Length: 458
Image 1 (cartoon, rainbow, N blue to C red):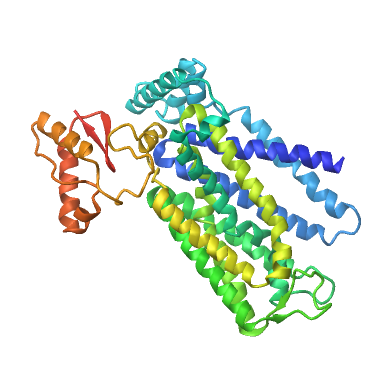
Image 2 (image 1 turned 90 degrees about the vertical axis):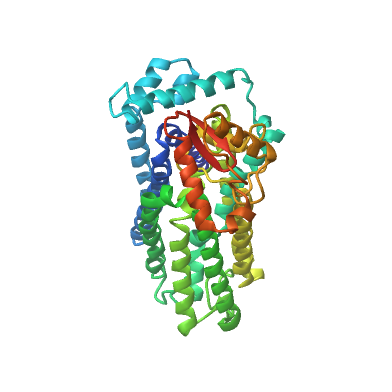
């Protein structure tokens, strides 16, 4: 029964972790989408923290209640979630897909229009949803194989690797096996056993507290800078831990520690530095890869593929979670401190991958994100390099100048996203770009994607 229950629970958690970010992304306004999806990660950190201390308290209970109590208490949030879902509105994009347009407008009025059905935002969002739904109906047959087609493969790999990299940071490994690290650093209880759990719990408190900055400022920071800073800092702390263990640790004596995975011993100031670096690693993950890895994938995909694509990304997350849970204990036995080197290399690799391949999606409507990957239109790129990487095409320059001439405004010289022009008098280029946008956007309602810019034209 225990095994069957865990299997059912695993399917349930998988469904929720795949669909919750999709639902939040589809119902949230673009300016708050990152913050609201980030609340999911914050809730996860609260759940981990609460359950850790419940388990810590249960460790003092004798008998089978020590494990039955924590498992039984997990039913409480599940029941609360079930009851809360009764009062939540359906996704307006899903309603539109089912031709329930009046209900879709009511939901948009409720969550975006502040109760005003004539709100310009409601009409604009509804119009964008309608155009996307009509287009997708003309291309209706949806299978997982479509995610592997040439026009989708790039963004599929980005979404999947976002979740894979979030696991290869080593954060969940730190969560699972932090007691190994702290035992090797000399925090083990000599009287029987569970004193190491309390200092281990500090990392869960840090995880909760440090997720808050991402909730407040993630949409202002943007997705790319947040991921890049997180990867750099985590690589730094992992490298420091690797160096400390390599230089100052000694092999554990036979019988010194209860587990073979606790293969090193380190004491004194280096041990304190290992503990500090571990806490700083958690503090670097919590506001960066923690929330963004759940926020980013649902923003990448069109409506008709979003559910399947996010499910695929989430499955990659759990698959690597499972694999790493089995990999780390024998890694500590066989390669000892080089385990930290391996995860540091992963962090360096994810920094490079994000830097060259991950486009920015913050503060963009989901329908507008589609243009980033639409290589058939001006401004679209099959491979979404950073906006400063390389010159815009001649077709983009020609189109921008044609539009400027049509509306009696100055021609736009050069490329808006040229790396060469951006390095020549950057301040002057920024001012020229701002003035051009103002002239072209004074009375417009239709967005136009040109290179890296989204402007309003009349």
